Length: 186
Image (tube, rainbow, N blue to C red):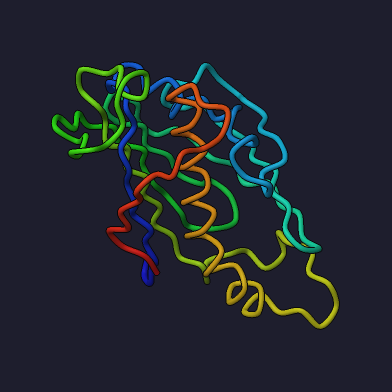
């Protein structure tokens, strides 16, 4: 990848890594976490080599991204790579985060884990590597215009996915206000 953008963010979930990782790994649940992902088709068992077709919609555009799991190391890491139309790869990483509960922070049922976890989401991509023929653009709409409009939304989407994922992990009906740490953004 010659020119790349990177999103790296993290947050704490009040469950141990062994309880967090199955949620991170369950791509078929992801449409619940974002309005732009409509459905996920699975080809494989979730281990390395499995392929997920992620049908996305935004504005007047729809696109199916094909993602391959390249490495799985439960309960620490799941690496992925897009295999069609754009150069992109990333990782979900889960690490123990002892002492992550601040003074005056969540108590009782909110903190059932002996060791909370820090969940990292990373995506590295080249927005200009997109195959222009893969997306049917409306007349007079350029790929550059689409990239310009989508770029700022990617970080917000990543934040939304992580917040809703944490709500699922912690068994909440509504997402709690999570503190997201943005380590890097485009």
